[in-house]
Image (tube, rainbow, N blue to C red):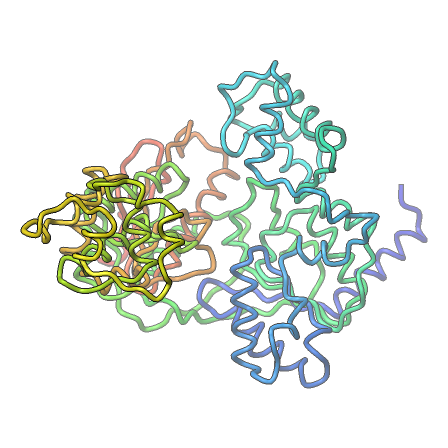
Length: 545
């Protein structure tokens, strides 16, 4: 037990933290990032250098956004000046000594975790492994919660592995990290644990932690350590958007445990009355939420429900789109629906819906068939897909290496020198008859639909539609949002505990509040769904009053 002297010391530490900490509660679209950059940074950059300021967020994308906004707001600085704007893991790694973290150590991602246990213990069944192994995910969750792995395993309502298999996987994984290879392995949880025990962080003038509601108890231990040697601390977040409890995140550390004065942002600039009303209906189901009444903007908009994907007016509404699923499998379904509808889209990492090499090959062939020339690079790429050749050796690197970089080719050149097996009269054959190597009938049909709807110029640009999970677009916004209600969970929504229902409400609240104008609810009658359909009916009834 803690004696009175220790208790008094801890109380003094908490009082000190309270005096130097400001907690910013910002509902969706109220300008948390704007406040942190335009107001907080501006205030402190008058007195100090940006190199004395640390900005911590939890995705590279969020950090890059903060850096870019800072450079725009303060053009007198360079990217190097904001070198302490990092994810928490990268910030820790920056201050590792070689004794703590050898640069030769290998970082472990989810795929490598699974590979390690699959190949290291042949007694484990190969049937229950996925890209992100369930047991190793529970183990990581326990570490982040500073809890016993077996206790966390027992609390899980749905168990993919038996307790014996779970323990075996954890033991195999930890043994391999230390003894299974010539060089040591380290995972993201190791980085945080080692930072807590072995890293001395330099003093800071200002520490900013964005999306603080998504930090785990393990990560908060590092934040406490950094904060102890910092003059001013800003924590920004929204507990209603705390959607990472599956990984051990605990928003109570932000709302209650970390002391500080509270500032509440009161007006959203993102959406108008329709989106605000619907999102607040979802929010009513969130238990123990911090008070945060806020006004909506004056943007026009509406909320509508659909049973069929093709009913959604993608071509009638101007602006950007998010099409969002709850989990990866539903996102894959959405991508297939979008391809069947001939939509041009990407994911949140900007990977396009088609093979860009295929697309470049199509454009090269189109230029040739209209009597235009292509350069060496375009010709090389096109030949990767061509099947109808007199001499297939013309696909080889040896041939193209002997060709000068500045050379251009027309159709006759390629027919004569590179083996295109076509009569002059067949010069204008459609591209799909030529580019057959990796093209399937599905590819061809999809490209034809895209070309018919968008044209080449628009397909060369950035897609206005992003299809991904709600988690992946957190922090972003689009003019229009489609929420696909199907969840494919092993148990339906009504069978969940109050805490599980609250966590589900937070996910869908986060998804709904990405919308600037309109929300489109798709397939909300599925038996395992979060009941977006019920919320929609409440929305309609209240709107009619």
